Image (cartoon, rainbow over all chains, first blue to last red; front, side, top):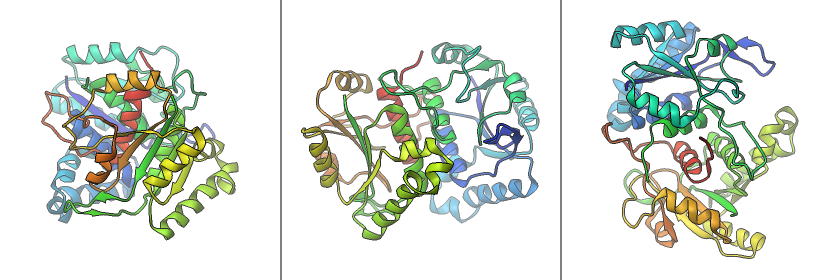
Length: 189
Length: 189
């Protein structure tokens, strides 16, 4: 089981339902790198096609892995060493192929995904037995563009409210990622 | 089952292990209000003894529940209506007593909590059958002060890495809260 995580800033939907790009959020980098480290994700890809955003993320990562941040907060450094910034989903996939020698299985989820989904329990079991790398993708903004959903090998259901609560599916992408990592890889009694 | 959530900015530990206060973080307010709404939390208390911080949080909440934010993003408004800012844990408890007529059972967790803990499964089951309100407490900074831990009726274990991953327990408080809400109240296959 080797797990990769990708946070896409393009192609994602905006609030009008159009395909576009979002800006990288600093707290996403930190929170998701820490969660990736906790659950044993090999590389957390921050995906943005925008040069200036790539440079910005590169500077943040350098600050915490080689710069003053690394000395001040070594646990943060340990998490951010697993983060990487790439220009596209294809580059993330190519990097995984380079590092593992295999094409990753793509797993997606989204607040509106209800069709063709597998259960968390079945995907969890599948990943434990799998020799193939897996790439979990999440979209910022209003979620992954349809073209990304179509490339997926596995679809996870949306995170739903418990039945006795009136439904609400507007979690932050940060929350959705950590909940799904815990559902797929968390171990507790 | 009536569930309350409290995010404490005092009394919490700083990185030297001393009891102190932290500043409120805007993203905590949004992410945790959205998660609270998703999982059916009745009120999310943001606890800070600092007047100016209370005013700041009050302004943020007002913007999203009555101001321009409410119209622009009604789903955010729906979540932030459940958030409230109070000066102390005692005030949060007093508000719960006023609203429910009962003293809440206090539930705590923390990255270093290993002694006297109950399993997530047993606490989940207990809460489903309970007629008493429950107040889940989380500490910002380096976690809840010992005085708060001592007041708890129930302790939950720390969120641990899976066994095959070298241990790491430095999740953000945002991540810890949503993972624990999902472990206690999440329903999925």
